[in-house]
Structure formats: structure tokens, C-alpha cells
Image (tube, rainbow, N blue to C red; front, side, top):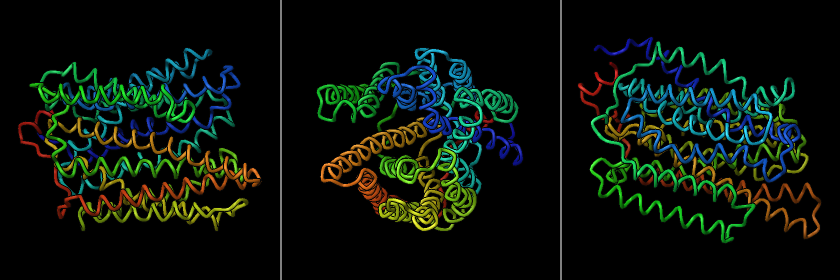
Length: 484
């Protein structure tokens, strides 16, 4: 079977990015509509959190398993299954008239979203094996991952203001149907590269349960208390399950996660960088959005527009300049440099005052963050997948997505807790409410900048960067099977 022609491969990339964009948008588009959902369905403050948490639990819990299932049974097949689950669940969310239906449908959305997110990255690695094309393709998917969240704020504000909250879910139906149809036509099928292996059921159950418990403990840590018996107990059980998972993998003939994967220097380093970088990114996106809304008084639509310049810069670097930098310098220098710029952007946010001016106090930080993210995401993804055999591409994708998800969730929880604590202490000291609130955000931005700086340091000192991105190792027979 001959390889796909160049035009078809790039069209397939667009299809995969559209599918992934639906998933990324969903994370933030819902946040904008939460007040409307609460009022319409009668959620309490506590139960409303489950509209978000139900999605995060299944999304974070099934990333690793979703990637491995793609290796075993075929990535296009899993992509279609995940997209169908996500689209169907979106319809159920959009039509929901009760709290229970909405929360259950959000859990199914998370499952479908996890599968789509990891399998899309694996398919891109298979479609683009030439280093320059791969760098460009990874830049495009990197922009979708980095910029889609802030686009979701803008879209969520428009849909919620002009129509109502149901449409933030219903808009997925036509997009999902189009992506499914184009996927069947443009994305190559074939059996999984690891189809000769069996599914490690015991490993799948233990690691999925461990990740779900860890996500649950993290997202509820601020409300329950980080030193509470519930939080510490859940984290202890999660750690015990992960230890059990490692023991199972060490003995399994067909492990869900070959432990040798962590001996690959770039894979291990890129995942550490991903955890730290995600914590910094969440500081930028969520905390700066709160600053704009709660301190400067921006509407949801104005918040989305405020992020637009950074997204434009991010797109320029992600989909062109970043690939050229990677081809010229490898992925170490662009990754470390991009993260350093992002750290500087967060430090600029740490000086934004009460009553700040957009052009002076917001725009420069947004542009620095957009530039840094646009440069950094492409080399980070390439580094995470660089030394991996084709049969483990889905697993490596699941691993880096899990690292980013867990780093973001933990980072946001820690930074939100620090901001709240600092704001409370300033309020107790007699500061005005807005000054106290801003002071809390300032501390969180500084810590976020330290996360980004630490990620840049790890990338600069630990990554092994070739002159050009190393292709995923794949023999001709495997390539023909993938493109069959």
C-alpha cells in the first residue's frame, strides 16, 4: 500500500485538529456558562463543581488507557469511537434538563475526549515522518492545544450571551458529524502497530483507578483541605494503586506501559517539563481571566477578546516559526527559550495593578505568553515522542497528555490556594477587597513564573536534542500496516 499523497495528509491533519479543538474548547467554554447552568438547573455551589469535575475525572483517568488501546486496535478506529462518544454526550448535555443527566453526560464527554486527545497526536506522528513536515504538523496541533482554551472563553461568552448555555454543547453536534465524515474519508485506517499484544487488563484497571482518584483528590483539595483525612487518604490510595500498577507492569508479558519507556531520556524529561509547564499555563489562563473579570470588571466576551492578541502571536509561532527553529536548533533551545519568555510574561502579570490599563498592564504580558507558548509547545511534543517505537506511539501520547493534565490540575489547585490564602491575609490586615484580591493573584503569578522557569531549566539541562527532530522508529512493514 502506497503512502498518502501530501495534499491528503495535510487535509487529514486539519480533520484531526478539528477533533482535538472540540476537546480543548470544551474545557473552558463550560466555565463561562457555569453561572447560567447553576441558575437554570438549580445547582448548589458544591454540586456545580461536578459539571467540571465529572469531565476531569474521566478525561484524566483514561488518557493512558486510551492511548494504549489505539496502539492495540488501530488509532483511526479509536479516534472515531472517541469522537462519537464525545459528540453523543454533547447532545445529551445540550438537551439536559436535570443535574444528574448533565453530570453523567459530562463524564462520558471526558471519556471520549481522552481518547480523541491522545489518538490524534499518535495519528499525526504516523502521517508525518519527514522531520520538517512533522515539526510543522506538531506546531499546528500544539497551537490547538495551547490556544484553544482561550478561544473557548470567547466562544463561550458569545454563545451564552446571544443564545443560552445549552448551545455551548449543541455546537459540537454539527462539528462532530463533519469531522467523523471527513475522518472516514481522509484519515488512514489499519490495525494497531501493537496488535500482536494483549490488553493488560489488570494494569489498565489499576492505573485508571489511580489517576481518577488522584484527579478527584486534587480538584477537591482546596474545598476539603489539603491536610484533611479525605484528601490525604485518597492520595495515599492513588499512590498505592500506582505502586501496584508498576509491580504488575514489571511482571506482565504484554504490559500496558513498558517500564523501559521511562529509561528514554527525552521521554522522561519532556514529561517532567510538561507537568511544570502545564502548571504555569494554567496560572496564565485561569488566573489572568479571573484578574480581568473580578478586578478590571471585564465581561466574558471582553476576556476572550483580551486573549486574542496572544492567540494570534501563538498561532504565528506555532504554525510556522517554531518549526523552523526546531529544524535549525533541535528542540532543546526553542523549548527552553519559549518557556523563559513565558516566565517573563507571568512576571509582568505579577505587577498588574488594580484599575490596570489593557495596553500597558495586560497586552505586553499576553504577547510574551503567546510568543513563549507558540515556540515551546511544538518542541515539547516532539521531545515527548522522539525516541518512541511505533508500537508505543499511542502510549507515549497518553503519557504526555496525562503529565500535562495532572500538572495543570495540581498547579491550578496549588496556585488558587496560594492566591486565596494571600488575599485573605491581606484582607485581615485591612486592605481593600480589590487590593487584597489582586495581591493574591500577584503571588500566584510569581509562583507560576517559577514553574515556567523550572521547566526551562530542566529542558535546557536534561534534553538530548538532535540537529533535527528524530522520527518515530518504524519499519516499512509497520508503516504499510498503518497506512493500509
